[in-house]
Each structure stands twice: as structure tokens, then as C-alpha cells.
Length: 142
Image 1 (cartoon, rainbow, N blue to C red):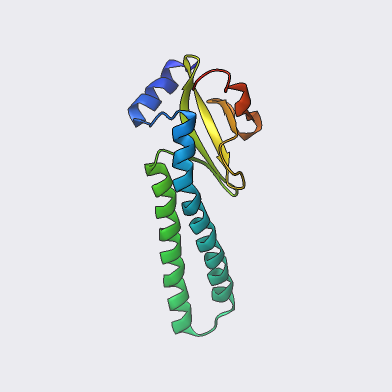
Image 2 (cartoon, helix red, strand yellow):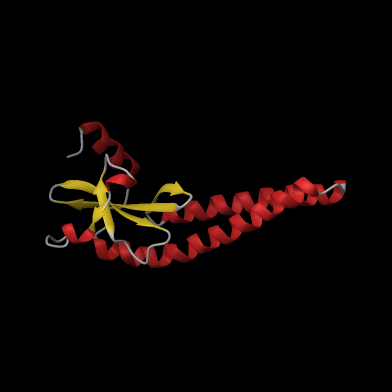
């Protein structure tokens, strides 16, 4: 059960509340964004490595500019996930939670980037370690 302060924060943030099907449909849109984030992260790592080795001042300026662009792009991709209603809970690996309502309380439906779909949930005050299988909820409609 939410305490008053947490409920107030959720209402104030006007978070989208998902049922399981809608969260899974949204995840289909989010997964390619996560793939792009990971691609850009690899590019960013390579650019940082090149920058460390580069001696030419003009090439260093280019790499520094490229790094800033990649960082801004990665940030905008994370914001895109949030705009879809996902809540970023981790970045390595990428963890995305979706607010849901079950048996008169809010819960998180959670996804980790290497999972095919949303297969776990946890209470609002629990983290990744508190994940439980969706099957425990499927007896009741989300």
C-alpha cells in the first residue's frame, strides 16, 4: 500500500498507469530504442578511446564534439522511453519499469533489456532483487 507521500508524488508526476498488455505493447516500441542506446554507447566508448590516443588537436576537437553529440543523443533516447511512460530504473543493464495497479495498490511491472517481454513485477518499495514472476499476478486481472 502506498503511503500518502508516495501516492502524492505519483499523482503529481501524472505517471501513466499500465495494464500488462499495454505495458507489453509499449515495450515493443521501447526495445528498438534500447538497441539504439546500446549502439550509441558502443560508439561513445570507441570515441573516448580514440580521444585518449589522439594527438592531433583538430581531430581531438572533432572527437570531443562527436562525444557531446552522442551523449546528447543517448540522453534524448532515454527521455523518449520516459515519454512513452517507462521509468528508467537502471542503465547498465537498462531496466525499465511500468507503473501498474493491482489489488488496490500500485506496483511496478519490470523489464530488463535482455528479456523478451515483461515477465516480472515488484512492489513500489522493492527494487530489482524483489522481482516476482508475472504468473503470480495473472490469476487476477491487472
